[in-house]
Length: 411
Picture 1 (cartoon, rainbow, N blue to C red):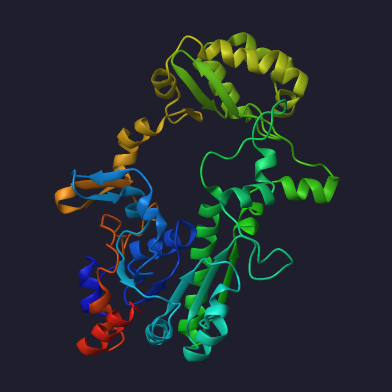
Picture 2: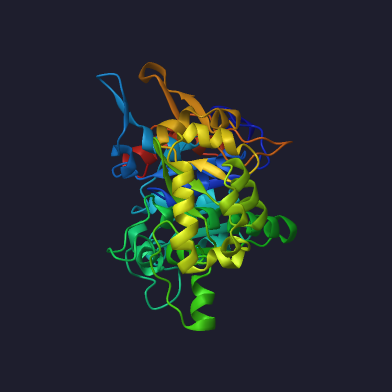
């Protein structure tokens, strides 16, 4: 795979030599394969030549006045090779089958049944390549009475219970402020794919990795499930509070808000010392963690004390006072996050070059490997940019065969 790896600046990483076919679109599937690409896999992004991934039209854009490129698409598809195949054609299906024969992983996020209707579902491709890891990410999964229903991120937030838990108790439920349904499915998809890949490498047998957005959201609900199964309690909305730890929430300060999580006896004593509050330190009602958690004591004594402590200080001052002694964190906007020294030290903002369009700065790779570091600072593919070289190198097609496929509309 050396020739293909070099095209996207790859050739290193823990997954070097692993070939991934990404026939997904939007976020959950593309982000799954993007993480694999960051970690060294050769990922081939497959798009329909007449209906490419529609996130190419999502803002914001790199724009030089004559050409523009979606930064959204670039962030989730960096480091991939780009080819086009029309799976609605017989020739297109043949091309996919030929590529699958040489691949290790396929990632798709169509509605269950779509690939089977096209004649290139898991059973067909697994028979063709028994070691193939076939990762299918969908709204409700490949089984169950709801499996064929269309779904988006918000579908998973609603059906997985998370939406009902988010917000304030006296107000309507609030959507989580990011695409957590997509992102959680992405992460479970990566974990399942890598587990199945290890099994395939050991045994020669691939398998279906079935990940549902709804299942993934359910697994993000902390103690809500066991609260219900053990006590019958249905999780409600708590705003910024935690269901069983106090203080552990948001507090106002001079120029914004901070999170303070000093709920243990040790942290409480340190905080009382930081603010020279002997009264709070010696109050018998506040002596133990269970006492401070009591709703009446928390609302009448603990919370007012913290509001009084923090009111005269800025976010920066409070963070500096706390240092590494107690958990105190300023609530930062995304601009503050991007400019943070910690963010820079962790290389969580990376840069990819897009020629005349300029450079794209985007989030980096949070997985830090000491021996085989990730390589996230790469550009994304143009539509069909690498079709010819991939078909030549991976599938062994001649120039004449590629020309014929293009003329027929299969690529």
